[in-house]
Amino acid sequence: MKRTLLLSILAVIPAALMPLAAASQVAPSVEKGSVGGGDKTYNWEAFAGFGYTSLNQVNQSRSGLMGVNLSVTRDFGKYFGVTADGAYYKYAIVSGNPGAPTVDAVLFGPVVHAELYGKFSGFAHALMGGEHTGGESQTPNISFAGGVGGGLEYKLGPRLSLRASGDDIASSFSLINNSKALGYSPHLHWNSRAAFGAVYRF
Image 1 (cartoon, helix red, strand yellow):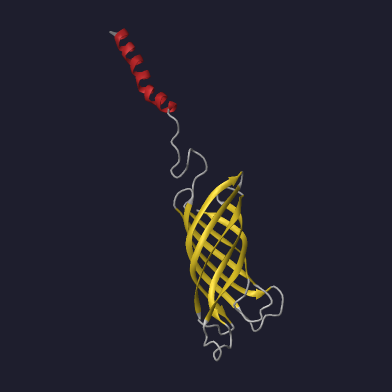
Image 2 (tube, helix red, strand yellow):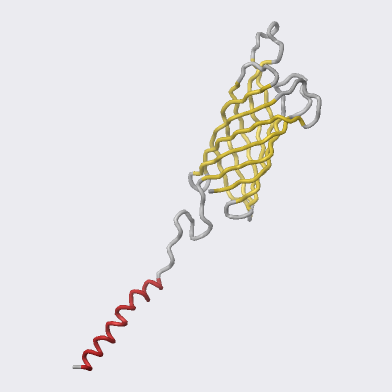
């Protein structure tokens, strides 16, 4: 009787420990949001950096403007996203511009991106929205604007990268003081932009 009871107890112990042993053999689950157990993928990214734009819509301008460029991107998968881009430019690189012109723009559009080599990746975007030129009484007050561009990124870590980008943005402003000759008819101008700063993913 005692022997049977002892054997029953000894049989219960391995039976109780067997699920633990089996659980230890299962591969750990992949963290949600990661691919193949690698770095976690983030759906949002924010960029902030130094910005530059040329100033072709202002008569007799001799210098482009410096300022700040900000953007937020929502990624949908590995290669595609949608970007909201905002920029404000105020400071001339060299003196010589008439008046005190400023440029601010709000643009939206799709972006495609891919890894290139090692820690380097690239992207291309097409943006549309509005642009305002201040300090020079431009007509119209806000012009439709849009263009294409792209850039390169260098990955510092899972969340942080350095970015250099450039694009060419078109807008349609009239020449200043042309009410008699041209009746404030707008003219298409292309402004090259550049930006350098940091990207944070979350």
